[in-house]
Length: 288
Image (cartoon, rainbow, N blue to C red):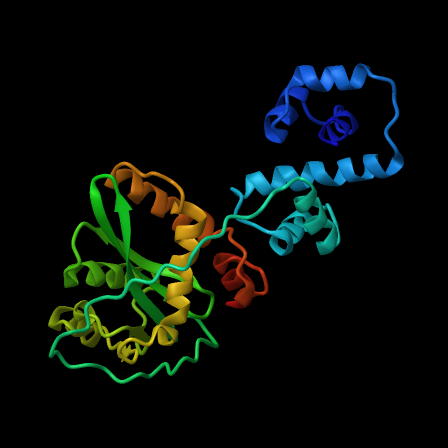
Protein backbone atom coordinates (compact mmCIF):
# COMPACT_ATOMS: atom_id res chain seq x y z
CA UNK A 1 0.00 0.00 0.00
CA UNK A 2 2.87 2.35 0.76
CA UNK A 3 4.52 1.48 -2.54
CA UNK A 4 1.28 2.30 -4.36
CA UNK A 5 1.19 5.69 -2.68
CA UNK A 6 4.82 6.32 -3.69
CA UNK A 7 4.07 5.34 -7.27
CA UNK A 8 1.04 7.63 -7.43
CA UNK A 9 3.01 10.61 -6.11
CA UNK A 10 6.37 9.95 -7.77
CA UNK A 11 5.96 13.05 -9.95
CA UNK A 12 5.43 15.27 -6.91
CA UNK A 13 7.95 13.94 -4.41
CA UNK A 14 11.38 12.33 -4.54
CA UNK A 15 11.33 8.56 -4.05
CA UNK A 16 14.13 8.84 -1.48
CA UNK A 17 12.11 11.30 0.64
CA UNK A 18 8.91 9.27 0.48
CA UNK A 19 10.76 6.06 1.36
CA UNK A 20 12.30 7.72 4.42
CA UNK A 21 8.97 9.15 5.64
CA UNK A 22 7.06 5.93 5.03
CA UNK A 23 9.75 3.70 6.51
CA UNK A 24 10.38 1.53 3.45
CA UNK A 25 13.39 0.91 1.22
CA UNK A 26 13.84 2.38 -2.24
CA UNK A 27 15.00 -0.99 -3.56
CA UNK A 28 11.80 -2.58 -2.28
CA UNK A 29 9.76 0.07 -4.06
CA UNK A 30 11.56 -0.43 -7.35
CA UNK A 31 11.14 -4.23 -7.05
CA UNK A 32 7.41 -3.75 -6.41
CA UNK A 33 7.05 -1.42 -9.39
CA UNK A 34 8.75 -3.94 -11.65
CA UNK A 35 6.14 -6.58 -10.87
CA UNK A 36 3.05 -7.03 -13.08
CA UNK A 37 0.17 -4.74 -12.12
CA UNK A 38 -2.41 -6.66 -10.17
CA UNK A 39 -3.59 -4.51 -7.33
CA UNK A 40 -7.30 -3.88 -7.10
CA UNK A 41 -8.98 -0.46 -7.16
CA UNK A 42 -9.77 -0.76 -3.44
CA UNK A 43 -6.12 -1.48 -2.64
CA UNK A 44 -5.06 1.59 -4.60
CA UNK A 45 -7.62 3.73 -2.76
CA UNK A 46 -6.38 2.45 0.61
CA UNK A 47 -2.80 3.14 -0.41
CA UNK A 48 -3.72 6.70 -1.43
CA UNK A 49 -5.21 7.21 2.06
CA UNK A 50 -2.59 5.38 4.11
CA UNK A 51 0.32 7.38 2.72
CA UNK A 52 -0.73 10.85 3.89
CA UNK A 53 -2.15 9.48 7.16
CA UNK A 54 1.16 7.76 7.90
CA UNK A 55 3.19 10.84 6.99
CA UNK A 56 1.03 13.20 9.08
CA UNK A 57 1.01 10.79 12.05
CA UNK A 58 4.79 10.93 12.28
CA UNK A 59 4.98 14.63 11.42
CA UNK A 60 2.91 15.25 14.55
CA UNK A 61 5.36 13.08 16.52
CA UNK A 62 2.89 10.22 17.03
CA UNK A 63 0.81 12.43 19.35
CA UNK A 64 -2.44 12.67 17.35
CA UNK A 65 -5.19 10.11 16.96
CA UNK A 66 -7.97 10.05 14.39
CA UNK A 67 -9.92 13.23 15.31
CA UNK A 68 -6.92 15.57 15.35
CA UNK A 69 -5.24 13.95 12.34
CA UNK A 70 -8.48 14.37 10.36
CA UNK A 71 -8.39 18.11 11.03
CA UNK A 72 -4.67 18.42 10.27
CA UNK A 73 -5.12 16.65 6.93
CA UNK A 74 -8.12 18.85 6.07
CA UNK A 75 -5.95 21.94 6.58
CA UNK A 76 -3.64 20.52 3.90
CA UNK A 77 -6.52 19.97 1.51
CA UNK A 78 -6.81 16.22 2.18
CA UNK A 79 -10.45 15.85 3.24
CA UNK A 80 -11.20 12.46 4.79
CA UNK A 81 -13.91 11.14 7.07
CA UNK A 82 -12.76 10.64 10.67
CA UNK A 83 -13.73 6.96 10.51
CA UNK A 84 -11.63 6.58 7.37
CA UNK A 85 -8.60 8.01 9.16
CA UNK A 86 -9.22 5.77 12.16
CA UNK A 87 -9.42 2.74 9.87
CA UNK A 88 -6.17 3.73 8.17
CA UNK A 89 -4.41 4.04 11.52
CA UNK A 90 -5.68 0.63 12.57
CA UNK A 91 -4.68 -0.91 9.24
CA UNK A 92 -1.14 0.42 9.67
CA UNK A 93 -1.04 -0.49 13.38
CA UNK A 94 -0.40 3.14 14.33
CA UNK A 95 -1.52 4.20 17.79
CA UNK A 96 -1.14 7.67 19.32
CA UNK A 97 1.02 7.95 22.39
CA UNK A 98 -0.89 7.33 25.60
CA UNK A 99 -0.03 6.48 29.12
CA UNK A 100 -1.01 6.42 32.72
CA UNK A 101 -2.09 9.57 34.53
CA UNK A 102 0.58 11.25 36.59
CA UNK A 103 -0.44 12.60 39.98
CA UNK A 104 2.00 14.54 42.12
CA UNK A 105 0.97 17.00 44.82
CA UNK A 106 2.85 19.77 46.56
CA UNK A 107 3.29 19.82 50.33
CA UNK A 108 0.15 21.27 51.96
CA UNK A 109 1.09 20.29 55.53
CA UNK A 110 1.78 23.74 56.93
CA UNK A 111 0.18 26.44 59.08
CA UNK A 112 0.31 29.28 56.54
CA UNK A 113 -2.88 31.17 55.58
CA UNK A 114 -4.92 29.57 52.78
CA UNK A 115 -6.93 31.48 50.16
CA UNK A 116 -10.61 30.70 49.42
CA UNK A 117 -11.57 28.69 46.35
CA UNK A 118 -12.69 31.42 43.98
CA UNK A 119 -12.61 29.14 40.95
CA UNK A 120 -14.99 26.42 42.27
CA UNK A 121 -14.21 24.11 39.33
CA UNK A 122 -15.47 26.63 36.77
CA UNK A 123 -12.78 26.30 34.11
CA UNK A 124 -14.48 28.61 31.61
CA UNK A 125 -13.32 32.16 30.86
CA UNK A 126 -14.78 34.85 28.60
CA UNK A 127 -11.52 36.64 27.87
CA UNK A 128 -7.76 36.27 28.39
CA UNK A 129 -6.38 37.02 31.85
CA UNK A 130 -9.58 36.31 33.76
CA UNK A 131 -8.38 33.05 35.30
CA UNK A 132 -4.95 31.43 35.49
CA UNK A 133 -4.31 28.04 37.04
CA UNK A 134 -0.91 26.94 38.31
CA UNK A 135 0.74 23.75 39.49
CA UNK A 136 4.10 22.01 39.94
CA UNK A 137 5.22 18.64 38.63
CA UNK A 138 8.33 16.48 39.02
CA UNK A 139 10.41 15.43 36.00
CA UNK A 140 13.04 12.72 36.37
CA UNK A 141 16.42 12.81 34.64
CA UNK A 142 19.50 10.65 35.07
CA UNK A 143 20.99 13.57 37.01
CA UNK A 144 18.05 13.69 39.43
CA UNK A 145 14.73 15.51 39.74
CA UNK A 146 13.83 18.70 37.93
CA UNK A 147 10.72 20.64 38.94
CA UNK A 148 8.40 22.47 36.56
CA UNK A 149 5.98 25.19 37.68
CA UNK A 150 3.57 26.66 35.16
CA UNK A 151 0.53 28.93 34.80
CA UNK A 152 -2.21 28.25 32.25
CA UNK A 153 -4.75 30.82 31.00
CA UNK A 154 -8.16 29.11 31.08
CA UNK A 155 -9.46 31.23 28.18
CA UNK A 156 -7.31 29.54 25.56
CA UNK A 157 -5.41 26.96 27.65
CA UNK A 158 -2.17 28.77 26.72
CA UNK A 159 0.82 28.27 29.01
CA UNK A 160 1.54 31.90 29.89
CA UNK A 161 4.32 31.38 32.41
CA UNK A 162 6.64 28.57 33.44
CA UNK A 163 9.87 27.97 35.34
CA UNK A 164 12.17 25.01 36.00
CA UNK A 165 14.64 24.38 38.81
CA UNK A 166 16.30 21.60 40.78
CA UNK A 167 14.48 22.80 43.93
CA UNK A 168 10.88 23.45 45.00
CA UNK A 169 11.31 26.71 46.89
CA UNK A 170 8.84 29.58 46.50
CA UNK A 171 11.25 31.13 44.01
CA UNK A 172 10.20 28.46 41.49
CA UNK A 173 6.53 29.51 41.38
CA UNK A 174 7.36 33.21 41.69
CA UNK A 175 9.53 33.03 38.57
CA UNK A 176 6.74 31.30 36.65
CA UNK A 177 4.25 33.96 37.73
CA UNK A 178 6.63 36.77 36.78
CA UNK A 179 6.90 35.30 33.28
CA UNK A 180 3.11 35.19 33.01
CA UNK A 181 2.81 38.81 34.15
CA UNK A 182 5.47 39.96 31.68
CA UNK A 183 4.04 37.91 28.82
CA UNK A 184 0.50 39.18 29.40
CA UNK A 185 1.61 42.82 29.88
CA UNK A 186 0.94 43.08 33.62
CA UNK A 187 -2.83 42.46 33.88
CA UNK A 188 -4.66 43.14 37.14
CA UNK A 189 -7.60 41.35 38.75
CA UNK A 190 -6.67 37.89 37.44
CA UNK A 191 -7.84 34.96 39.58
CA UNK A 192 -4.70 32.88 40.13
CA UNK A 193 -5.77 29.39 41.20
CA UNK A 194 -3.38 26.85 42.72
CA UNK A 195 -3.38 24.10 45.32
CA UNK A 196 -2.51 24.74 48.97
CA UNK A 197 1.16 23.95 48.52
CA UNK A 198 3.58 25.73 50.80
CA UNK A 199 5.13 27.53 47.81
CA UNK A 200 1.81 29.19 46.93
CA UNK A 201 0.99 30.05 50.53
CA UNK A 202 4.45 31.53 51.11
CA UNK A 203 4.79 35.22 51.88
CA UNK A 204 6.94 35.73 48.74
CA UNK A 205 4.27 34.38 46.39
CA UNK A 206 1.36 36.04 48.16
CA UNK A 207 3.20 39.36 48.20
CA UNK A 208 3.80 39.05 44.46
CA UNK A 209 0.05 38.58 43.98
CA UNK A 210 -0.72 41.61 46.11
CA UNK A 211 1.88 43.78 44.38
CA UNK A 212 0.23 43.12 41.01
CA UNK A 213 -3.38 43.16 42.28
CA UNK A 214 -4.04 39.50 41.48
CA UNK A 215 -6.59 37.39 43.37
CA UNK A 216 -5.38 34.23 45.06
CA UNK A 217 -7.59 31.13 44.86
CA UNK A 218 -6.81 27.66 46.20
CA UNK A 219 -8.20 24.15 45.81
CA UNK A 220 -9.60 22.20 48.71
CA UNK A 221 -6.88 20.09 50.27
CA UNK A 222 -6.41 16.80 48.42
CA UNK A 223 -9.04 17.53 45.75
CA UNK A 224 -7.32 17.08 42.37
CA UNK A 225 -10.53 17.95 40.47
CA UNK A 226 -10.30 21.56 41.71
CA UNK A 227 -7.24 22.02 39.49
CA UNK A 228 -8.04 19.58 36.71
CA UNK A 229 -6.97 21.86 33.84
CA UNK A 230 -3.42 22.16 35.16
CA UNK A 231 -3.18 18.42 35.78
CA UNK A 232 -4.48 17.76 32.26
CA UNK A 233 -1.66 19.85 30.80
CA UNK A 234 0.99 17.96 32.79
CA UNK A 235 -0.53 14.67 31.66
CA UNK A 236 -0.28 15.77 28.01
CA UNK A 237 3.31 16.94 28.48
CA UNK A 238 4.46 13.70 30.03
CA UNK A 239 2.60 11.39 27.66
CA UNK A 240 3.43 13.26 24.46
CA UNK A 241 6.98 14.44 25.10
CA UNK A 242 8.57 12.61 28.03
CA UNK A 243 7.00 9.24 28.90
CA UNK A 244 9.09 6.38 27.52
CA UNK A 245 12.08 8.64 26.81
CA UNK A 246 15.30 8.32 28.80
CA UNK A 247 16.39 11.92 29.33
CA UNK A 248 19.94 11.96 30.63
CA UNK A 249 20.55 15.54 31.73
CA UNK A 250 18.65 18.41 33.26
CA UNK A 251 19.72 20.59 30.32
CA UNK A 252 18.15 18.15 27.88
CA UNK A 253 14.95 18.06 29.97
CA UNK A 254 14.77 21.86 29.87
CA UNK A 255 15.15 21.75 26.09
CA UNK A 256 12.40 19.11 25.82
CA UNK A 257 9.99 21.12 27.94
CA UNK A 258 10.78 24.36 26.08
CA UNK A 259 10.15 22.70 22.72
CA UNK A 260 6.87 21.17 23.88
CA UNK A 261 5.45 24.34 25.45
CA UNK A 262 6.72 27.06 23.14
CA UNK A 263 6.86 25.29 19.79
CA UNK A 264 4.29 22.49 19.93
CA UNK A 265 1.68 23.13 22.64
CA UNK A 266 1.07 26.88 22.49
CA UNK A 267 1.55 27.28 18.74
CA UNK A 268 0.30 24.16 16.98
CA UNK A 269 -1.26 21.56 19.29
CA UNK A 270 -5.01 21.25 18.72
CA UNK A 271 -7.03 21.63 21.92
CA UNK A 272 -10.57 20.27 22.17
CA UNK A 273 -11.61 23.11 24.51
CA UNK A 274 -10.71 25.55 21.71
CA UNK A 275 -12.68 23.79 18.99
CA UNK A 276 -9.46 22.00 17.98
CA UNK A 277 -7.46 25.20 17.55
CA UNK A 278 -4.11 25.71 19.23
CA UNK A 279 -4.06 28.24 22.10
CA UNK A 280 -2.24 30.77 19.92
CA UNK A 281 -4.61 30.31 16.98
CA UNK A 282 -7.66 30.48 19.25
CA UNK A 283 -6.59 33.82 20.71
CA UNK A 284 -5.65 35.20 17.28
CA UNK A 285 -9.12 34.32 16.02
CA UNK A 286 -11.16 35.52 19.00
CA UNK A 287 -9.26 38.37 20.64
CA UNK A 288 -9.51 41.74 18.92
